[in-house]
Length: 251
Image 1 (cartoon, rainbow, N blue to C red):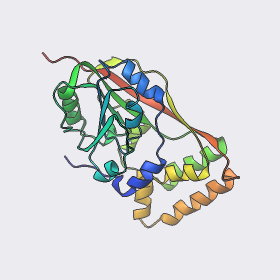
Image 2: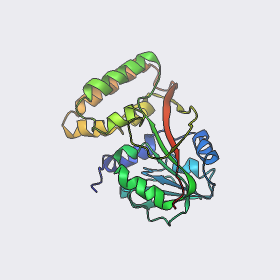
Image 3: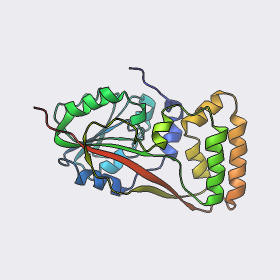
Image 4: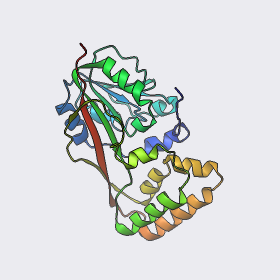
């Protein structure tokens, strides 16, 4: 397996600017899990979901293949972070009530990850793939972001991005389906926070590597001009897509 590391170089920005999940996501997962003793958050980044899971599960093991991401992870008394690929967690057999991957499954070797989920899962445990695509905001700002996303960054998005845009609907998912509730990420952000978040995109890192950083700067100028008062906060929303399933017992 080759770890596709698009985010270590931006780990500090990722920790500072990626949106944190609402408690309702963790509560929805816990209510559908086999128990609340242990959740495994694979591909955890710097803990945007891990810390929220820690509010409802007795223990959370949060793993990421990137040491730089784990170094930036947000501490929580019930979260233990570890550097490990999603395909080889190091967890004990039959120990996990909820195996979740948030905004990460499109980078995994899915067959190997699913084998690992089956190995570590308790009978009837929940497996959850969580993702979100382009943010929603005021129409004028949203139009600028959409043009930057689809035109300026065209050719810089890795092919896996398509899976995110599809809400993981096209991913193989060999588990008994569990109905998912409608959920969303919501934050009130100012212009600097929005630009900080956009700066964490993998395609933006690719744009910079290609020597086209001035296009990011030009976009930032346009967004700030359209935003107006830089301290003004607007509602930024990301509808969530969840693929939930039940891990069958091994016979």
